[in-house]
Image (cartoon, rainbow, N blue to C red):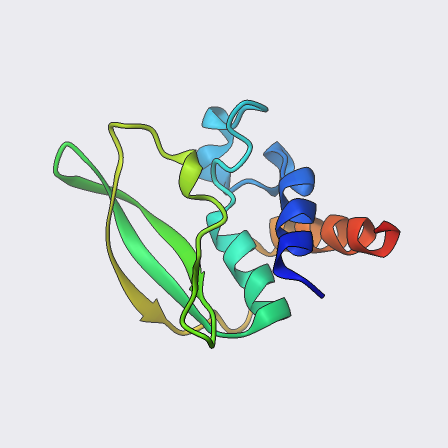
Length: 124
């Protein structure tokens, strides 16, 4: 499986129902990556391994959120959702973090995104 195929399937699968709850109000078809970073990073981790990376999102010097992406085993950084941020939002830092174990607040969104991606990949 190629990462480009999975990335394309992800982009076709994002929606307000796969978005982080606090970002739903800001999600639009013009910015489909909004609020998708955690579920997307975990799904990419499922397919390609590596590590998860998390950073702070800052607005006017205040931390307002977190941003997640992947560092693959070969060292490549894959940030499938960086385009979600506007010019007033800065992604700062980036530390490797453990994959969440057990239930999380994004389980429903993650399951829906995973099923959509699997269906798109099966048709490819």
